[in-house]
Image (cartoon, rainbow, N blue to C red; front, side):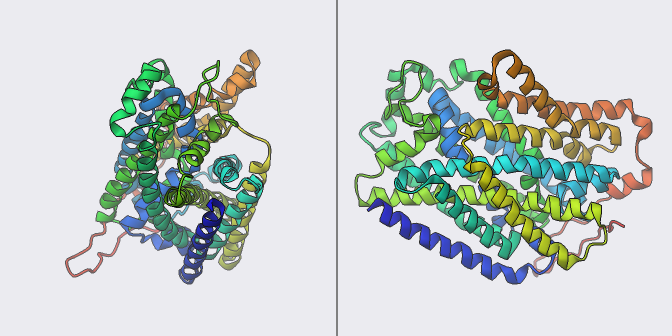
Amino acid sequence: MLQFIAVISLAVFTIVNVLVGVLSSRRTKTMESFLLAGRNLGPLLSAFSYGTSYFSAVIFIGYAGMFGWTIGMGSMWIGIGNAILGCLLAWLILAKPTRRMTHSLNTRTMPEFFAARFLDRRMKVYAALIIFLFLVPYAAGVYKGLGSLFSVIFTQASPTVCMAIVAVLTAVYLILGGYVATAWNDLIQGCIMIFGLLCMVILIVNQPEVGGFSEVTKRLGAIDPALVNPTGGASGKMLIVNILLTSFGVWGMPQMIHKYYAVRKGGSIRIATVISTVFALFIGCGAYFTGALSHLFFWSDADGLPAVEGGYDFIIPTLLTRALTSGVFPVIILCVVMLLLLSASMSTLSALVLSSSSAVSIDLMQAVNPNIDKRKQMVVMRVFCLVFVLLSFLFASMNISFIVNLMSFSWGVVAGSFIGPFLWGLYGKFVTRIGVWAGLLCGPAIVGFLLLYNMSRFGFEAAKGLAPQFGVAAMAASFLIVPAVSLLTGKHGYEPAHIQKVFETEEEGAEEGNGERITERVPRAR
């Protein structure tokens, strides 16, 4: 019965996603519309696109399982941090200046922004290579997280086959409809995530092992008082590191910054800020809360690890199949949860594909051939969407089991490369080209050095567990080194005319009472 309902659910989900892609294809005739939806996306679509791209299946399968088990209820602070620091503060600080400056400079991608803002084409090529190379393993982690659940529900199906279905479906609607299709599917998928998580938490909490919300802290505390310690107890340091990594990391991730480019100006940004923050708070806290409940369903072995075949990555899938297969309604909810994880993964994957394929088709190809035909560029963009999906799928098919570590390494390199240069590029008139290059090199240099150093001392198994610390160190260094080096190399600053153009304000768009939009006044990049 479970597999029959799951197949029907997947079929309906697939039809809806493809239909959205077909309908959206009419609105993606140019590169601007394909990549940015004409920079006119409303607040609801922008907010859900940001929120669903933030949370993939990895938060439920990898992070919630691992940190819910090791930290307990305190792991919910990661979800709270994601909402406040990764959504609310990020939108307040980044959204408005990002939209204004990228529009003023006529840039559509993060590499284009670096080249135009700092007048250095080499930055464009370097940033594009970082994006394409390191977002492939990031996307592979998304596949792996989803494959863990599918292999539990479809016991006779290979996880590779399940991942292939996800890859094909994502590629189809993305190639057809671009960011327009992605945004509408993100809205649909976001609603599925909210409904699925709500039902999942209610049903699991009411299982005999839990005994209702009033019994949660009592029963967890009876197992180990540290599981209900709000500060994380002995795991407090690990908790803080992961809050910093997953919350501030999105400030430098190109697929997240991309959402600010396309949002409609004026009040849309304020509304999107509120919606995305509430969405992140619900999804993040719900996921980690579920992970903490795993102690009520599984025993610990002699080493304190969960007695679950497959380890941390299979805590949540095994918990779901144990708690939600005792009747028709729970099975239906389990299938909704399956769609929840599928939705979370596909939205994140589509955002990664857009960022990575644009890095090649726009940034690298234009660096080689600045006069490339726009129609040919559109074809290349769609081809590289397919190429990226294929590469990430092949990477995910390899026998790499450490989902959380894989994501952390990629996250650390990309965010560590871009967070400092991008943030200071938005606000710092004094930054120099040398300072920006120092920040751009932080990601691979610091993560690579720390990885090799710890491998030489403690071995790879110990070093991979420190991946979040490497990422936080790279981001902190990137943020600090850009202004420090810029102040030391101040004589290499930019001409006042360029700075004036970059920071020239535009009239913030507003919706008048009669519904007419005020026309923007922005300089166009030459």
